[in-house]
Image 1: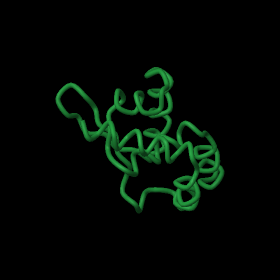
Image 2: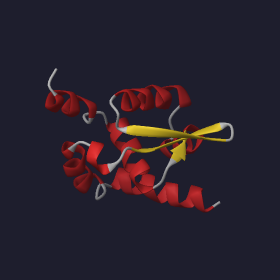
Image 3: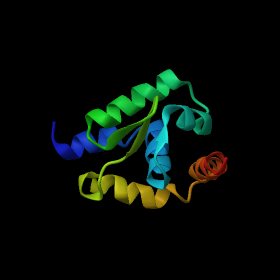
Image 4: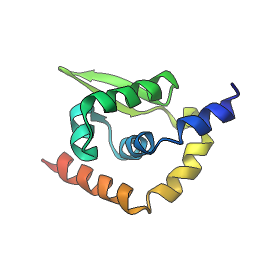
Length: 106
């Protein structure tokens, strides 16, 4: 499968796009992401695994939690960069970012 087709498929899932949008704002662990996105941790973990296997995310262990963050800009697909510019204006993604700001202030 070509990189372009793989990237289109990777970024065609709304949950993955929501995860990536949040992680472009701040690194987070599964519990934080689950609280913001209002999805079960098992579903979230599945999506995080897909993103990690495609080298879009990196991890860092902090105590008993694993924090997820975006890979370096050079490794992020240009397709996501284009999609991201449109996503941040969408109400669902704005709501996620607002919830993240509230959660991370605590």
